[in-house]
Image 1: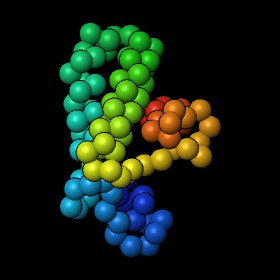
Image 2: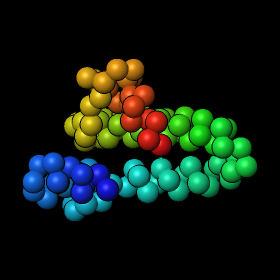
Image 3: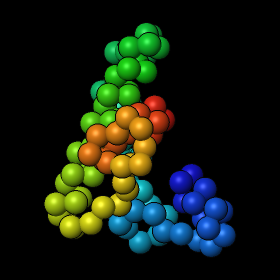
Length: 97
């Protein structure tokens, strides 16, 4: 979805992430991680939302940190967002998880 949105805005096919092609493993792994670990919260939508928010935010922060250390590059930067932490995560993007 991100590839489609960014490509339509730039009016050309845009690869996102560090893999070749439109692959962003953080989304698939994040969804799998959250789905498997939060089964016990399925009956409580508020707890499920809060736990998904926290887990998604932690996953995004750690992924950003590790990728920056391994590849010496930043794939995203939320420094210009309100309520962000070190430019790695922000409230507005974390709510999407």
